[in-house]
Every structure is written in C-alpha cells, then in structure tokens.
Amino acid sequence: MKDDSKIQTTVDFIDSQLPQQSRLSQSSLTFNEGIKSGIPIAVGYIPISVAFGLLAKSAGVPDYLSILMSLMVFAGASQFVAVNLITLGVMPFEIITATFILNLRHFLMSASISQKLEKSISKTWMSIISFGITDETFTVASLRSEEEVSRDFMLGLNLVAYSAWVFGTAVGVFLAPSLPESLKSSMGIALYAMFIGLLVPALKNSPPVLTVSLTAAIINSFLNYVPMFINLSAGWAIIISTIASSCIGAIIYPKGVKVGE
Amino acid sequence: MSKLILIVLGMAIVTYIPRMLPMVLLKDVKMPPFLKSFFQFIPFAALGALIFPEIISSTGNIKSALAGMVVSIILAFFRLNVMIVVLGGILGVFLYQLI
Image 1 (tube, each protein chain N blue to C red):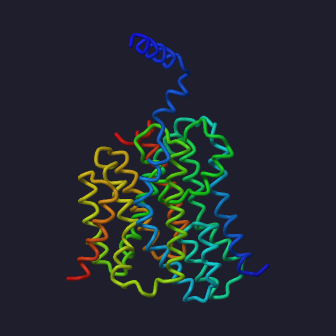
Image 2: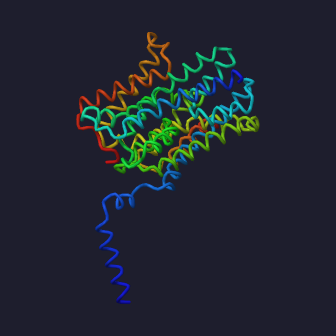
Image 3: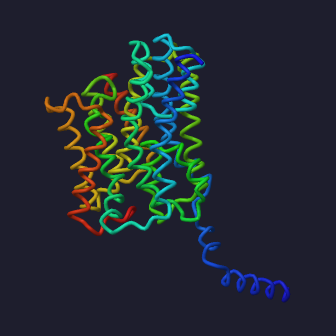
C-alpha cells in the first residue's frame, strides 16, 4: 500500500517534469472526436453525392468513372460542373481549368487552417491531411474552440467526410432511382444548415464575426445578382467575397478574433 | 489512356495543389498581425459567402428553402448540436413541402 502511493508520487513527479509537448498531446483532439465532428458533414454529403452519382449516370458517364472522380477529386461543385461539361463535349483542358477556378478558394482555406493545426505535424502528414480540405471539413476544424487541432482529429474528420462522399456516389450510380424525390430535395438544405449551425453560435457573441460574415454574404449576393457580374463563376464570386470581407475585418479589427468565445 | 480518365486525373491534380501547397509551405511561417487577423476571419467570411445566396436555391423551391433556413437559424441560435441543426433544417423543408 505504502509502496503504491510512493510509486504514484514518483509518477506524478515524472509527469510534472515531462516537456510541455507530451502534456499538450494529452489534451489534443482524438481521432474519435474527429469522426464525431464529421458526422454532420457525412449527413450533408450523402444526398449530394447520391445526386452526383445519379446525374453522372443519366449523363452517360461510365459507373467506374463517376466513382473514380469522387475518389480522386473529392470536390462537389466541380464534379457536377465536369459531368455537365463532359456531356456538352467540352475540351478536357477547359474542364480542368473550370475545376481549378472553382476550387481555388481551397487555397485560402488551406492557408488559413495551416495556422490552426498543431505545429508538430510533419510536412508529409500535412500533405496527406490537405487532400481532405473541403468547405465543410475546413469550417468544422476552424471553428473548434481549441487553440490547435491535431493530426488525428483531422484524419478522423476527413475520413468520415470522404467515405460518405464516395459511398454516396456509389449509391447514386447503382440504386438511387428508387429514392423518393421529396426526401432528396429536402436534403439539399443539409450542408447549408450545417454551415448555419457552425456560424450562428459564433456570431451571436462576436461583433467582428457578425460584421465579416454578413459583409461576405452581401458581397456574394451582389456578385450573384448584379447583371454586370453575372458571368463571374461561383468559384470566383466566393473567393472575392471571402477575401474582401476578411480584409475589411482585419482593417476594422486588427486584433482578429478568438474562435469559440 | 481514355479521354475521360485524363479529365479526372487533371481535375485531381488541380484540386489537390491549392489544398496542399499553403498547408505545407505556411506551416512554420510566423505571420504579421494583419495577415494573422485576415486569416482568422477567413472561415467566417467563407461561411457567409457559402451560405448566401446559394441556400435559397438549395431545395429547388425558395419558400421551402427559407423554411429550412429559419428552422436552422433558430436551432443554431440556441447553440444546439450541429447534427440537430442539420436534421431540423431537413425536417423544416420536408414539412413545408407536405403542407
């Protein structure tokens, strides 16, 4: 008994002497927490990827190619656009360019999240995690209240989102025609509802967050509806709105904002 | 190699590069305060732009989309779990379509 408590004290002592790194890693977010945070994304991805599989099939794209596209590209909007352009017989170069422009916003997101990830993550792991950056995984990870997000959390988050995307595509290709239309259209709101679920609690108590997100929404609506900009692609409209309103935010609030206050 | 596989490969490359480069290159970069603050605002700005105005065309019917949006905002306002906000939004649209 006495020996036990002695061992315990020694363990406590050793623990307190450990470098900060290993104590930090105790509080780092786990793989399972990543999976849990990814579930709302999966719910949103399933109907969209099912719709993608369906569309690709009805456009005459071979089954294996739709699934390959979801496996390798993993980017919603550009996959829809690509299938559309393929059926129109557009040149591969133009399809690839359209994809590039549509996904250029991930450049900003990747730069932003590089500052939120744990510093100990190696470049190799960074390059693996980065494959899973989407609008949804990026916002979920960025809005965690923790100071830093771990590698394992990102892997869990990405895995759930990616699996749902690929699984949904396969469902769409093989058996979606039997799904009721009303259910499919109701689920179209899923990802937007998730964005709302992430954004509203953050802007409730933070004037800077409210200002910046509202400005972005206004600029994006402007770019969508004003005739002069109607030819601007959705990708560019989102990039311009995001950069402009973040810039305005950084000018008005140079100290930035703490997530999860 | 078939033309279609070429398209998918090209798409995969141009999608992966913008995702990967900043994360790998900026990993250890100490940013000046203005840029730091700029990048802190990016998620909120992106959310604003991603939600609006696309949400109103997400269900193929502006009114049902607005119904889902209002339900989601109310649920999110009370800090309910994101999963509940998502299911509430879907249910809002579904019920609106029924009536």
